[in-house]
Amino acid sequence: MVIVGGTFEVQGRSREQFLAERLDLMRRSRAEHGCLEYTFSADPLNPSRVLLFEIWASREDLDAHLAAGRAAPALTTASVTAISSAITTYEVAETAPLG
Picture 1: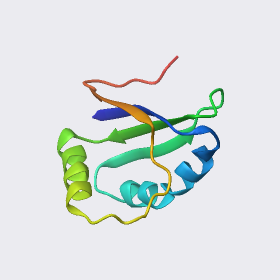
Picture 2 (picture 1 turned 90 degrees about the vertical axis):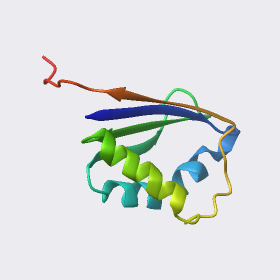
Picture 3 (picture 1 turned 60 degrees about the vertical axis):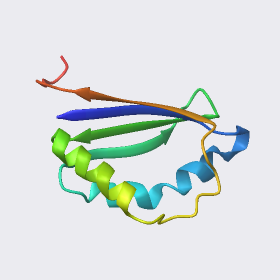
């Protein structure tokens, strides 16, 4: 299992537009083989910050997702781009419910 976590900083009041422009990307990604979760969401404490959270069944599934994204033409014309971003992948060997 692979978890992807990230943050994006966007200009002031453009966060809602940034999120709206990624709705189709979230729908398409969630339909891909091996995608268990794929969400962009608003940080409730910082109005310029967007969070990314993904879970993939395997590294191969994530790699296929990334390759497809690089090969596909732009499917949206995003009017809002991030000022900065930081994305990290985590390889998970074992999971268990909390508590």
